[in-house]
Length: 491
Image 1 (cartoon, rainbow, N blue to C red):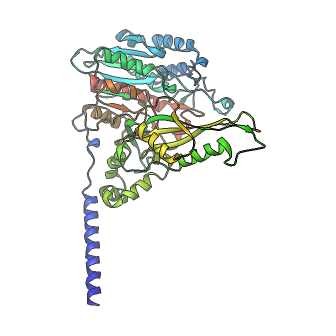
Image 2 (image 1 turned 60 degrees about the vertical axis):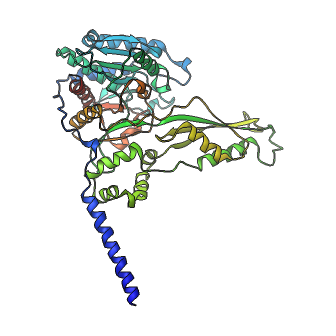
Image 3 (image 1 turned 135 degrees about the vertical axis):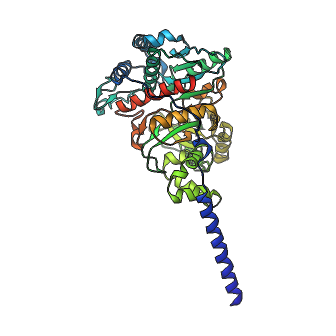
């Protein structure tokens, strides 16, 4: 009994020590370096004509610069109309900046700074929009290309993605130029013409800048926003993307002899083989890991979160699995912590009573930083084993972007301005989709992705969906953010 008593006391003492260590680490948890923007004096707000900006956004939406998967369906004349409209709507800005047109109707503006020794900054948006799904036009409160200004918002395809940013940036430049502002640091604007189809426009801009020896302090493009109801604190949080996932679509083909469906082979034929291969690949997911920009967001916000969240983050060595499980409770949360696998398309026989001579599936991957297209392919090959299928990329994949710094001058400029405009804390995170900005990595020290708009988690569904709209309040925040960022970082 004495031995058992001593064991019990030892276990109790160890438990008390563990509790003391966990609580002490929790109480000592401090904000990460990403939250430190001390020393940055953010420029004052500027006077904005929101009604004029709303009218301009409305007119831009009415020009349907739609990029289709089949580029033969694109109407090039719409880009000509948009370019003419921009010259007319922003005469002072166009007088202050030089402009060149590059591949895919991409526009590159240069607002020359008074000190050419200072590395420039680059602000990005894109002109093209996705199509409206045929048959859903009647589901919109206002016609998708009508540009209605109603109910305190501008409605239509591209209002958020991404003509809102395009107009917001030009409104900011026009406003500043009218006030006589001239930047010390050169400001470059890149407006891609084919972002929605992962085209050539941004690549052409990168080549153009590289040929001129440009290395920007930072690039800022679309990507993340201000969450009104972030799940960690329940309050507002400005989330800035420091990296984005890679993109690749794996084509899985199961060759087969074909024939009549009345005499199928014992193994079920190509479709059955393909089904087994897709199931094997999808059933071997990449592990969820608490690392990278997704984890950095949680670590940055944790000091303002509830005690259980602070305790888990301060003691990752003990609660790491719990953090992963909680973060991955939703598909969006899980996507931040690993490479995702999404079977999306299938092709088999052209007729119901014919066995296909080959069956094909397409699996879309969003590749997390730390993985590569090579590791994705290796994992897929391992999953299918000796199944008689052929694996190949449908088109050359894009690798994940590098992770940009949260200690750099550029981060501090963007984070400080975002926090001032949003009146919210700022945190880094991972963009799980793709943007044009990835292609400008070779001509910039850091690349960030952020739109200064306030969204609830539910609002995000309208992007590429039905009833896309930008509130006038968010339009004003956009213009304020871009104007104040230009003055803060280039003034």
